[in-house]
Image (cartoon, rainbow, N blue to C red; front, side):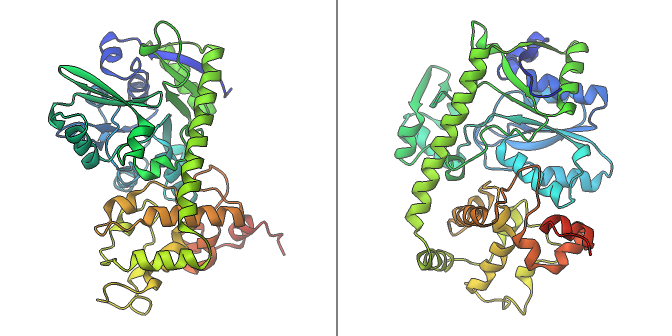
Length: 413
């Protein structure tokens, strides 16, 4: 049975206190390891400070405690770590907590046969967005008039940014900060997946109401596999579950709707500023004229996985030519734009501050209107890239007529 929604928390008092909202996610990941549901967990751990989190692969449940709590700074995806773990350990099963863009990227990699859906357990997290570390440090210095190294925690909740220091707690309306040039990353402000329903379970604080709200997590069963793990973890004695309050569920739905509307408004504003037709092409040509051909955009992108990169073919892109001609970027657009998950990795790593993620998301939106394909959904396969590249048929789908016919809905001869 799927679709059931609960409030839950860890049974262990230490986990409840160290984790976020009752430590439910930490306990679920712990059960996945203890029960053999997963051989490893991919989690996020604080680095030198809260501005420096990063993914880690964990096999010992005790190591999960160092990953308890939410990290709002950082611009990474966990897909690179997951792919590496699957490649280096064939047959391994992994449980991972993911935000919306992570979930979308994983779904696209599943469609490309890079990940077996049966080998990965996905716990989705409600996500209000992430904050760029350097800009956030500057915000703490210039607006909060505080030392960034003194910051002990940072959260986004109910449309407000809360910062805790040893001697004070400061709160700011998120929209006000973003109007001033601070706040969430641009791709987060455009996000269309605040709740990644394509996962096995979805957890978060949205919709948690009542006297003990600070110590509870709302969790929804999205697949049968997710529901089984949830109830078994309760039977094992690691978590407590109770039916979610109906008013809380309605509140969660309103929050999701509001977040989607906010993102749509921002997308429309950004896309409108680009223009249409030749204006878009001229904008792309102007912005990409700064490119130094460092290939960081391709290295960062979770979907740039061609074994033989077309952007390095000398007959398509002349070696040593900087800036490269428009063809360099058109090749990548034709491969990725229909499936862009708006993770922002390409733009974050661009040394020349080219708004690549905005370009990709704009093109993906246009292609979705033309072909009806929405990237990151569990069903369907990307169309445009497959039409352009014969070689990709073979290393993605085996180049068989049966597979091709599924894509184009063709009838057998």
